[in-house]
Amino acid sequence: MEKIDLRRRHLLAGTAGAAALVASGVRVSAQEAGAGPLPEYVEFKDADALIIHSNNTIETKRDVFGVQPITSEHQLYVRNNVTPPDESIVADRDAWEVSIEGVANPGSVTVGDLKRMGVETVAMVLQCSGNGRAFFEHETSGTQWQTGAAGCVMWTGVPLRTVVENMGGVVDGAQFVTGTGGEEIPEGLNASDVIVERSVPLDALDNILLAWDMNGEPISLAHGGPLRMIVPGFTGVNNVKYIKRVAMTEVETDALIQRQRYRLVPLGESGSPEYPSVWQMEVKSWITGPLEAAASGMHQITGLAFGGINAVDSVEVSLDDGETWEAAEFVGPDLGRYAWRPFVLAKDLAPGSYRIVSRATDSEGNQQPEAPEPNQSGYNHNGWRAPGVDVTIS
Figure 1 (cartoon, one colour):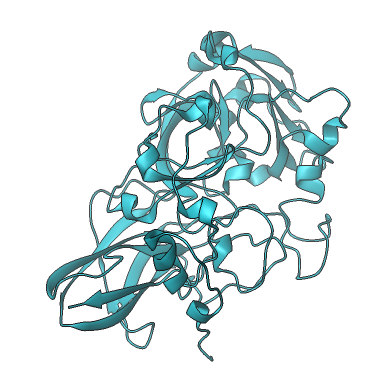
Figure 2 (cartoon, rainbow, N blue to C red):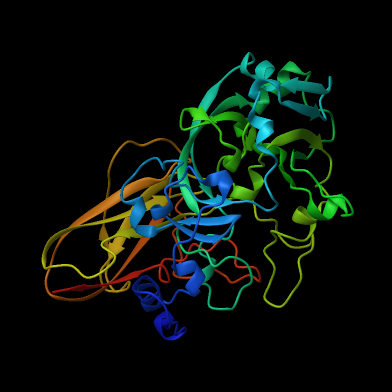
């Protein structure tokens, strides 16, 4: 396959940080490359660890990840499709109600009720569907995420399967689990055009959590508190925040966010139900260090890898842009099928220029491709070549 030199595609002015990103072929605006004030609802976060794209799109800087098995909430990316609800919804968390429909005995339950039904914890990669959008060859609208619209976090809550069993089981004919968020719809707007409501296949039900804690603390408003529907292995948009309704349905929701948006649409086409929905994540990895110039000698080349809907099985690193590969080692604990694994390759680097890339393989034998099939909106980028880093050793 002919190599694509992404470094020649974009010439951008700006800070040294922006220049470094240009060297890797990433589209970055001056606003995205610089720091900005954090919105009030996320002012608790570490601003130095983040890139502020907008009030609702905030990215983790690549050099922050290191080999952390779990991402701190203070450094975790933020993506909201609409403005978050008022802070008052987390004032009395246990009183928050969620409607359960499409079961034999439908009804509403509070978070307090859910906590008495059962509890499980899952470590999971939370990744925006558009993470890596900046690496596609074609021009895409939307936030030009690089590698930082992702994190690995611990969710604690009650399994949805337990809730459904307590309410008599799934009704006949159901094919999907449909979750509806609790954001307020401004007056004068068509609710179906704005509402955050997503449907996922019913076979995901056994793994779904209705979660109230993240990393051992109550989920903040920024990340969907007081209750969030967690769908392990699925992209972020399917993990509905402020979950207000969960229904087992015969058909997918007709909401715009499902009907037209978050679809894998061929270039030049518009979204519609005929195209695949952005649901399950695929195997992926990227380098977290070194990222810039360094002195010669022994280096620990680090990165992160995950399998998406499957467990990650192995990862390789190349110092010559994919010409040759070496097996890297996972470090730290294995937190389960849906978590990422930090990896490391120890190398004695002589003076010179290196293009460092990584390539992961999941438990089913699926290997990270050199470049993914393009789609109109730039979803699900998992190619190994474009996110590579150029390092000069002196």
